[in-house]
Image 1 (spheres, rainbow over the protein chains, first blue to last red):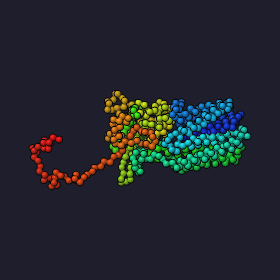
Image 2 (spheres, helix red, strand yellow; image 1 turned 90 degrees about the vertical axis):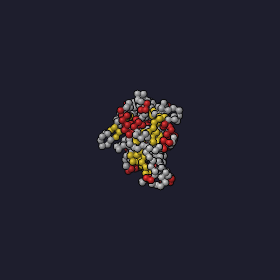
Image 3 (cartoon, rainbow over the protein chains, first blue to last red; image 1 turned 135 degrees about the vertical axis):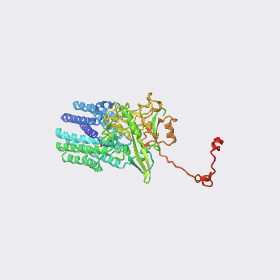
Image 4 (cartoon, protein in one colour; image 1 turned 120 degrees about the horizontal axis):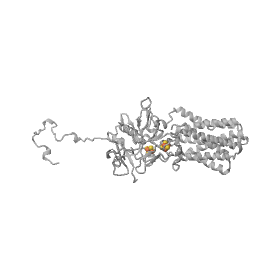
Length: 294
Length: 245
Ligand code: SF4
Ligand code: SF4
């Protein structure tokens, strides 16, 4: 697929916001830390929401997307996201156990919706795995915990160390999950071939013409069009920045706000590479009909 | 299975890859009720545009034993269309009455999710109108009472000079389309995803002529010299005059 920056930004920003909420709720943080944290979580979610609008051809009709929640995970996400944002705001203003727990449920539901948007498509085999949801969730939590540690180091130093430790543990788990999905996807065999695509049972089929001499939506949307080196670079970036580099910073200064903030930014950069790679790696079977890009 | 399912049946043995279906489709759907179907930079160096139907060409086999297959490709109006349930707005839907899969251009938000959910790449976004487009089976002409009955067919079917495209209800076992699928080995594309495409393709067939040894010898010319056969008079009765077939 061709990674869309709007979606890469949305899933990573919202993931960080969700993780931050979960971290502060789980730690039962209060006072200034809670208020600042909820404000930042809201800002992250809002920025993600804004980015997602750039993915739409008709953002002014976005309200219609709430209609098909019975069948569409995208529709479910469109409903859960604003609901969660409202709960984040409410929890920041009047923290309470019941409200917080409700927010946590909405938060997890949002992770599931976002993951299922990708995991529910049977022929995008790279995404068709529970690991998609697990990774979206763990990576979001890891990034949120790093943000919480940085924030705590600044506003409530006593909490910085536990947050930093949790960030390391969850970060390591997320890293393992992501490596597991990389390993899984490297072994995938595409179910569709040119033979099933055009229904001619012959092992040697070559495309001569794809129906248009210029490009088309089909040649732009479903392939990243970057050389192999770029894809490989994205993979190494994600492998380096999603966990090892920020973990080193966290270990270097588990109580230092600047170091922890740097760790968060570094990890976020890694998550951008991770999400870009997530899309770029997925091979859509329609590309069989467009061999110039397959 | 009892309700109607309109579909195309495309005969790959007959298609010559002339693109008449592509241009007639573009013509009708650019000017028809659902139009326009926009292009970007159509006369420039890097043209691009939205099409419902494209004809691709494949070479099967290895030189010199190759065969050229022309392959028209459009939305297959799947009986279990994966593109429909994922649409968050309900803009994409499958009609209960005739099985045509359509997009309501006024509801579509242009999120492109349905195009990701179609394994065939049958949907294309209209880059100017920012909504998703795909083959409608010419829903705006096949029911048009103002047209003569014979013209109430998709534009591509009418345009095809080799009659490689059949149109009909594949749930009616007696329709021309159903019969062609049944009797000529009609198949579906990428059956592995369980989408049950309504459109079917008829396979390439080998046309072989078997000559038997006795066919090489003219039994009515034992001397093997044509001129020496007794030539009948012009006035003599011919075979047709004396025999009733
Ligand atoms: S061919 Fe693609 S767009 Fe058409 S009905 Fe099937 S899945 Fe949907
Ligand atoms: S692009 Fe339009 S038709 Fe397709 S899923 Fe989005 S809203 Fe539905």
